[in-house]
Amino acid sequence: MKILSIGLGLAMSCFLFARVAYDNLIDTCFNDYGRIYQLNMQFKIGGNELAWQEMCVGKLTEGVYSALGEDMV
Image (cartoon, rainbow, N blue to C red):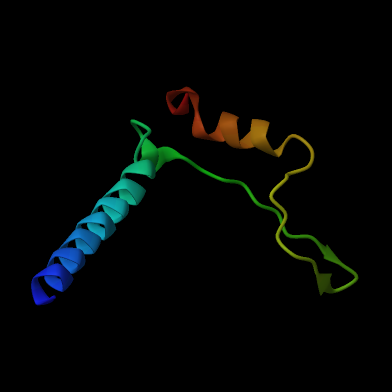
């Protein structure tokens, strides 16, 4: 019974380490993963701050693109 318990524990730890390694691999699948940016906006209306929005209005992305330059493509 002890051998079965030890074997099962070792198998579960191997699966756990494989899952952690796989999760860490997903975040770095791009060549330049350190240069990925996300734009968020937060509106203030009448002194009340609303929640962060994942969409941006207007030509904000074009302004950021022109400010960062052609090397960001």
